[in-house]
Length: 324
Image (tube, rainbow, N blue to C red):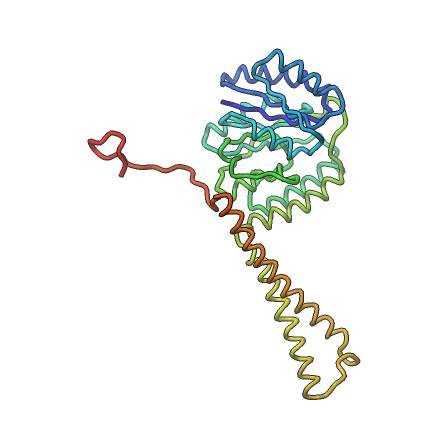
């Protein structure tokens, strides 16, 4: 079973051409399939067109969100409703060619858990899109440890069980491969076509690049310290406590042994030492709170910090279905 998840926001001019091309491609793939359009509170005729289409095609499902929650939330809604064993996510503006879907599915059939699209020859504006995207992708690869050249594209194929281990929020949809790699997902990159937008205005601008930078820091922390936040905050707390404590001990010696006026002679240093000491204690406290929150998170939801790919057993001789 194959599920195609497409978030939509004000794409009325692209919906019908996209549906026609998708139908042709999916008929050629010869697999059971469903197409899920997620309308992220469009204010044009997008939902009207989708409502008409769903009446004529049993493969379609239309999900309409109450307000504009953003692309990550729309994808999450589609993933939750998808019934397929393989889920393909793509944009609804025809910048992703449906004809590339078989190439993504081929990598899944080869045993990979995620097939990620790679816009090898981008047609975007060099200054506004290409250069910032290249820098962001390099930073994402370094922060996550996942060797991908194009994190930004939505066009990816996933095994459904991989997505069950990934909770999406904020704008983390572009980091699904990095988040899934935490649980050992095998990832392949597939060259895809990059085409100009057929109609409408792009929803992305240069400001999105700055938001990506914050997401990179979030991912770096989640991948490295998610289950052990004390290892991050504890180091900072230790440095602050030792530095601040050392300064305060030295100033105390100056006061007690040499009777110096600390405010006059070492006022700035005294303030710096006190701030470092307090900051170090706060970092320790934050680390302890983080440790308690992680334990509450995993234990209350019965989640595990690992994911099992498969379990093999050997049948006992002469006992059908037995295991050893």
